[in-house]
Amino acid sequence: MEELRSLLGNNHWFVTILIGLVVGVLARFFVSGRHRMGIILTTLLGIAGAVVAGLVGQYMGWYGPGQSAGFFASLFGAIAILALVGLFRGR
Image (cartoon, rainbow, N blue to C red; front, side, top):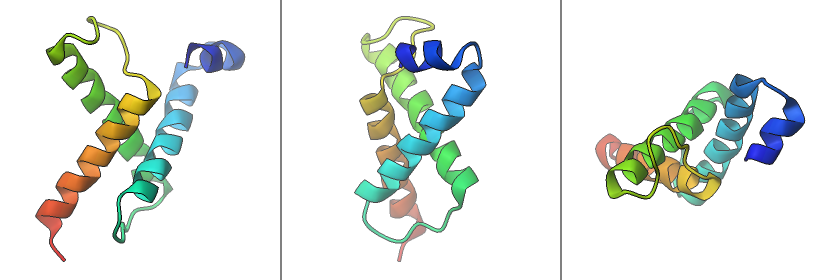
């Protein structure tokens, strides 16, 4: 992830949105069912997955304070969020 940040310069917000979009799209692909959300909610899903993965990783001792979660951890976090939403939403 650092390589991508160095390629795009100091625009951390742009990289966060771009990676959030990719993670959100992949999470929607891996979780079955129909997810009614546009590109903005998909991006927010990916970003929220990264936040959840970072918090869980810090709690478990995998990441230090201020350290961000990796790509796959973010993907698993977004998948977990979609699974939880699916449980509460019903059919």
